[in-house]
Structure formats: C-alpha cells, structure tokens
Image (cartoon, rainbow, N blue to C red; front, side, top):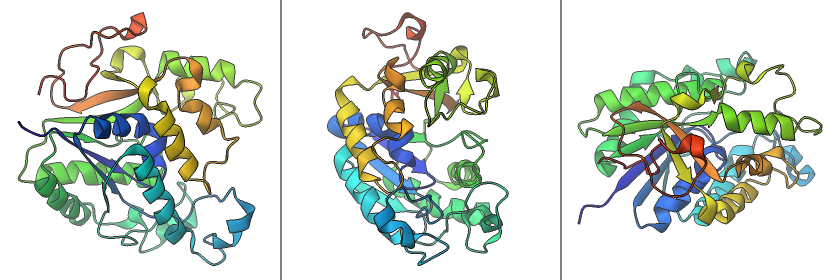
Amino acid sequence: MNTRRILFVHAHPDDESITTGATMARYAAAGDQVTLVTCTLGEEGEIHVPTYSQLAADQADQLGGYRIAELASACAAMGVVDHRFLGGAGHFRDSGMMGLPTNDNPRAFWQADVRAAGSMLAQIIDEVRPQVLVTYDPNGGYGHPDHIQTHRVSMAALDQAKWVVTKVYCPTVPRTIAQYGMERLANSAENPFAEAETIDELPFVVPDGQVSARIDAREFLAAKRAALAAHATQIPANSWLNVWADNFGADAAEYFVLMRGYLGPAGTEERPKWTEDLESDLFAGI
C-alpha cells in the first residue's frame, strides 16, 4: 500500500497552526506522512507574555530559540513528528513586517537567494516525495515578506526537485467566511478587519468560486486549539486567532486554493451548500 505524503511549507512558527493546523492533524491521525518545513524562527514576533518580554529582538534577541520549543509542542498537539527548519534552525532570520529595517538584515529570509533556498527545499522534497505540497499564494496571504519569500522558494524548489509533486495548494479564506467574521468581530477590541471598509479590501480573502478544497475540521478543532495555545508568546488566550480556529463559528473547516495540478472529485460529506462542489481531501484524484 502506497503511503500518502503531504508537505507543508510555512514561514514562521505558529503559521502552521493558524492556517493549516486542523488539516495537519487530520492527515497525521489518518496515518499519512505529514512533514512540516518552517523557514525562520520568528525572531521578530510580538511577545504577548510579559514574563518573556525581554526575549524580544530589540533586547536579548532570544525569542527565536524559545519559539523552537513552542513549535515542538504545537507539532506534538497535531500529531506531526517530521518537522524541519529550512537550512537548519536559525539559518534564515525572520524579516519582520514589510518595509521595516529588519527586511534589510543580511540574514533575513527576505534577502535569501531564492534559487539557493529553493535547492535546500528541493532536497527535502526529493527525500520525502510528497504527492501534495501546501504553501502560500504569491502575495503570501497578506503581504508579509517571509510569506511571499516562502512562496517563491517553494516554487523554485518544485522546479529544481527531481520528484514531481502532483498537487500544490495554498490556504485561503473564502469571502463568505470572511464576511461572517467581519460582522462577528465588528465591535471587538481585537478586530483584524478594522482597517477594511469592505471584505474585498482584505488581501487574504478570495471569492468563494476560486476556492478548491474544504477540509472538515470538526474532529480536529481540539488539536488545532492546543497547537495555537502552544504558541503562547504569540497567541494569548484572548486572541482573535482562537475564534478564527473554527472560522468564527461559521464553519469548522480549513479552505485551500489549488495552485498547481488538477482537481479531484468533490466530497460527499455533509457541509454548507455553497461548498458542495469542493474537494474534501487534498489527495483527491491522486
């Protein structure tokens, strides 16, 4: 029996849990081979735990090392046993948000030679031989330089690898879900939609018709929430990201857009009517 193998490529510790945590937990629980590659240690992250505030980049600059342990705990919560840092832990540094001086650090991932970094990832692809790869869209979901670079490096790796990956996806937020979240969080102190007057201004939102797959997360929400909680320096208990885990209560699922490959048959499980034509398995058709 051939093992199903899926590779997730993310920019920072916690990205895997926020956007794909339930999907990773689902495939791990099914006995599929799940591999996670993280490109930086997230050294420039904002610390939400006062006890660890002095680990910040502008003080002791030890946050990245601490986040290695957070990521290990998150992977354990999701049942993921194969995790690697691209080039080894600390090889590439978190670049910070777009336009900040941290983008110019010679060690910043944003400054990495795309082909050279792609070669590192290509070696992992050739070793793991995944049928499916999950990473970001060309804009990195919301324009973070490390997310954009992760997309570029992933595409370079796919072109350099000897192993041919059958399907490539990016996580996404359908417009219907985002609209529900925008309305639910309208009066929240922590509202990620606050600066947008309309849903269409949000860079990470796509029209419902562009979505390819819906992964049912109901059985794996507990694992996803535990993985989010493991990233305690970044995601406090009152964070809106904890509400995001089940799409603000609108639909316990994670959504993806197919970037390379072909669509498989739609799923047949019970789900919202507007998702009936979507794949329910990223391996669909393989």
